Image 1 (cartoon, rainbow, N blue to C red):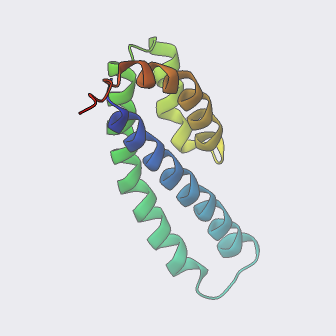
Image 2: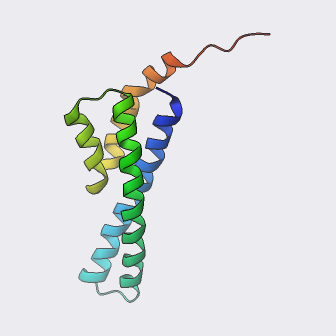
Length: 112
């Protein structure tokens, strides 16, 4: 498995996680606190999170298939983008697990 596969997943996990936290906060501001302008912000963040979550799903599935994850673990990784802050914890756990495997597969640089 290439390091780029893990890097793409990590970037999208953080992006999806941040957008989901922003979405939750904007929903609280819109419905709970009745803040002016929160409706527009909520709409923008919701659209961005929705589209980027699809990209996250693609990258997470790619990571899971190349890392040969069990189906249950892969489903948990895929669903982590729908639970606020779960993406951060799942990303960290998966990265710690897969980084040694990625390091073992990098070819040694030939000395001149």
